Length: 190
Image (tube, rainbow, N blue to C red):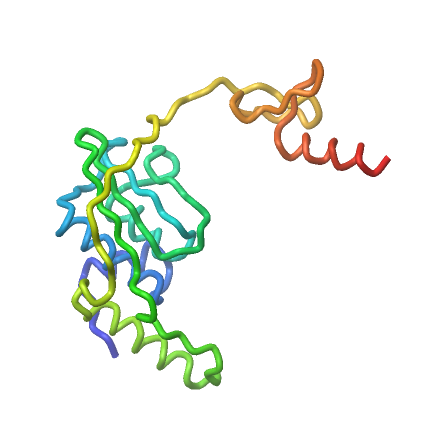
């Protein structure tokens, strides 16, 4: 049985279980702190741009306090284990990407082999030197605007308040995106 650090145990409690994705996120955070010098964000001074929506992102939320609610966790749906951290005040950035082939996940394992393989993979991720797991390099990116609070406007179809920047206008009517999509779909069918 693997003996986990206290920090990793806290992360498991937050996330709900240990898994390879969570251990990748844990190691990414270690790199961000050690190599980038980043600290837990009180507000939006640290921005995390994540290129996946896997378990790994929970480690970034838990340890660095980059969250969707604060507007300093940005999701790019690229399906890649890539994480970019940028300090808003300095523009200093660090990109951390998983090296190819590091996981070597085999999908043809029987049910008895899967938990053992999974645990070995977690151990490997937690024990490997980060240089073997990740490519790490400094980056300069255009900083996104700070999070804005916008007025909410009721959708003319469902009545639900919708952020004004997400409203779709059609003639004199305003719609939330789901209702606008339904209206456009209905019109195409007629």
